[in-house]
Image (cartoon, rainbow, N blue to C red):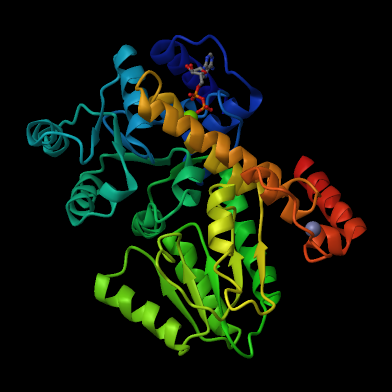
Length: 405
Ligand code: ADP
Ligand code: MG
Ligand code: ZN
């Protein structure tokens, strides 16, 4: 173990020019990864040096390379630039590259001696047959040091029909059990799992519509599929709708729901434009909507026949963290780019308002009215806050206390 330790310290100094570790945790994660006895999950705040947790172990595997799965091209570029400054050959395979650039990378990967030490891949690329074959050959020639998943929470959580290929990473990983993986941000992966536990609770609380029907909005395609299955298991006919379906299938799904063959449609926010069904009894948001206006519009699809109807919104801090992270990132990239800057900043501001909306106990009707600058309507005890003010306050307090830990 002491041998390991001095080798690690030596590599830290030589490759990165750091005299010591940033934290005990960083050191432990690296030590553990170097041993290659198990996969390593790293959960530390932003700026605490999570990249080093796979970069250093990767560099310690002589003549091998680490495949890094990363959700955004911008993040990939930052890391490749950073490694280039340290004279570490790193490259990417992604859709934005010219065929010449691609050819150069592929030639190096196929060479007897590969120079590239870190290969950055988006989940979409990882899912292609081409990459699968490439990986197979790298593995056969014993060139794989580690798999690393950077910013795992973004890949898994961000949605509005985004990143369905994320799930395939797990399958890919399972094919190479001898190659260890290092995952950045386990906190969020755990949150994702908790989200699944949350789903169970949310399924139990589902309304059982006797007549009429409902819409369940989810942020990702994957979530749409999962919720549709979960709802069906509760004995309620449900169907999934998202932009990943073929147009003909989308039309069929929508019609099955319009006709009433299926009581519940689970959908991403791509569903609803131009859909006018009067007898929608409820609209449920399985996770945080993108802003107050979208929430107003989507939940407003319930009760157009003026019969009693309701909407419900599930809210969790993990979702908030990952959405905020990506919106902030978008805004940063758009800085100095005119309209784009304005739009991204507005998206972020508007998102913070829905967060506020969820984390306070004021009449929901009043909150909507304030948002649109309308006079406050008479709620008549129709919203959760006005109906049971004490209970609402207590629930929020409990939630906030749980989130503190
Ligand atoms: P994270 O991914 O956790 O947000 P990064 O991996 O981007 O953080 O690292 C943040 C900064 O900390 C980088 O500038 C990196 O060079 C620096 N850093 C990482 N490890 C060390 C260390 N042991 N000593 C000094 N600086 C470090
Ligand atoms: Mg990072
Ligand atoms: Zn109210």
